[in-house]
Length: 129
Image 1 (cartoon, helix red, strand yellow):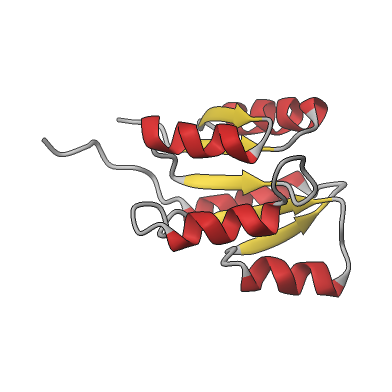
Image 2 (image 1 turned 45 degrees about the vertical axis):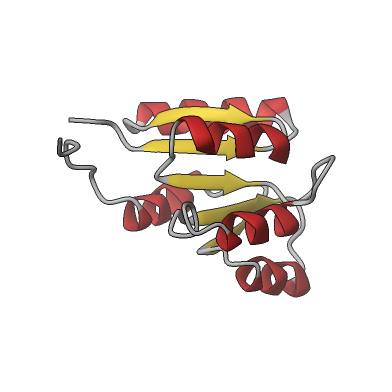
């Protein structure tokens, strides 16, 4: 059976590595991208089942990136969860308005995050041919 694929988009390498380790331990296949440009190119190559997205990044912020993904009919159904150091109610509101399924604030409660990911990414069935 194919492992569910998650892509982590965060310009902080430590965050990417921490999340990747936690997700791989839980049986997910993980890819990561340091910025939005890399995310866009990787979406074309291997479609993820979920995107974990930071808000504060160079080139394009997470809110704009999420809106861009949601505008693309090929990718709009991929759930996006924001993972951010910005925890103001305004930030959460902007995240949800941009199309995100959820918004988590760093430092992360990994158990809550993993539970939410499991809700959004049911066990993946083998691909039909």
